[in-house]
Length: 369
Image (tube, helix red, strand yellow):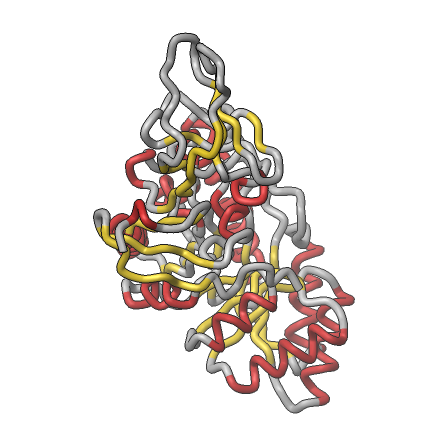
């Protein structure tokens, strides 16, 4: 099958670009002396996780327990769940997963969470590796550094025999919101400084942090400057999107995933001002980029974007005098925020050049629980 024969709307992955993106990030981490633990919330596909590990990643990170279950079932053996596990049902699933998966670790940042997890693990005779999230400028989750963090980690070490303290994770603030490279770098370095100083503070009080883990796709540009961080967790780099292209994390040409769509309607007027594609918000989402307008940018016409996205219709407005494409013509679209886009589809159509070489099921899509 040729690419232009793929039924639309469809997510199309350029295999060679995907391989290069994976290899380039692995090489960057290796050069910086860092362990790479890619976040799979973007691709949600075990075969891509295996490609990342084959390229040198130590393991993977997942956003949710459901994603981790998919990755473990797909043969991934080292999984970090970078999210608080709360609720008896989820604790049972986590411990079930840890019983047969070689290396499972998770994130904690509240006393309630560690007490429940410790109790559940001890009841089953298990011990769970935990990373403590330290608040490093993202203002979302995490323990405040300093004495609050020290007391929290001491609680794990001294009073939670069902848990093993492994290290710190953090999310830097500012990296993904500023367009200026100097502000991005400042945000990334500030987050790393908070986390590494927190690790040093713990060490001063006799507690070693095996891992200090941070990272994002836009922040990876500054990986070489992060002293004391020994693990990095980028995610979107495998595919890329317009948001991170706007931020300078990669170019449009490096993006390996596009949305293939078909022109289904053109107004029957003398000078049509738009045309309509079969990719609407249920394919493209309503996520925005940073500076690029619309809900997705056309690859063939880079100055044009989907300007209106209703559920199944994507309208592209065109300048006066522009000839619209023909009904039935297929066009590719760069996504604005690829993690959201992937979560709405079932399949990745993998191509080399114009030839379809595989279809990969997005097994982790919708695994929000």
